[in-house]
Length: 50
Image (cartoon, rainbow, N blue to C red; front, top):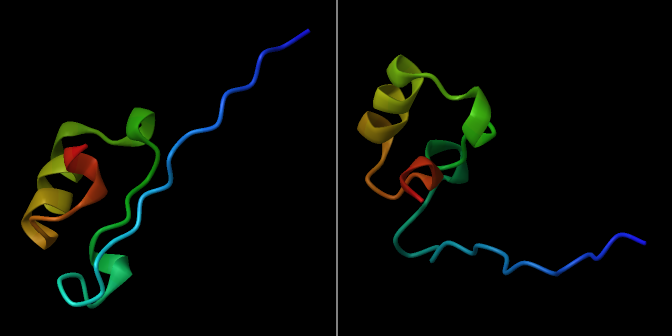
């Protein structure tokens, strides 16, 4: 039987991150070097930093 563990969700502070579309990303295994650079330029709070 598979063992499933919960994971903590990520919540952004709305007073810091006004627009979620600036910080959400594709799945980590789909982000190439150029896309990662674009995400990092878009916002210092991007999920790609995690």
